[in-house]
Image 1 (tube, rainbow, N blue to C red):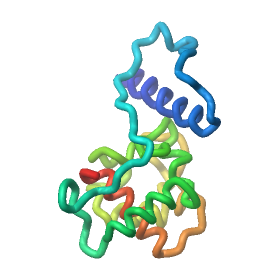
Image 2: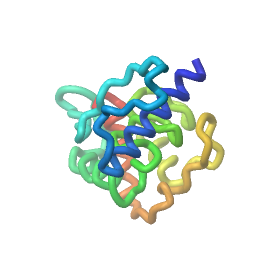
Image 3: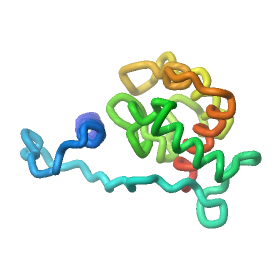
Image 4: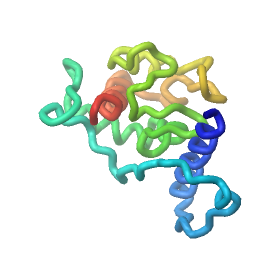
Length: 158
């Protein structure tokens, strides 16, 4: 099971790295040709935020505008995508934020997510490097709330 997680993590990290570099047409599989390909669903180019009317409900005080702003921060100034992947599916460096499994916080509440964004994760339970506060970026309180709203939305039915 550990090898499967490692292979899947490496595959996701490779895809993110190739996408960031603008390369990789998927034709060359290299040494991975002998390994069974991990079952990974392709991620949407632009992850959709939670829709309160049709999917995950947003916490009180969180708006669709906050989610949209948070998505921009996640993929830009917040540095989040660097370790969590462009769509938050995780990499070998940081966990998947799109599922309901929480590794470094108990339940994945909006408040817990804000706490992790604000303070970081000094000693991650399953990944090799600590997460600095705010991903190493300088974010305002409003930006922390917005990126937390986005993470909440993609992990709670968005």
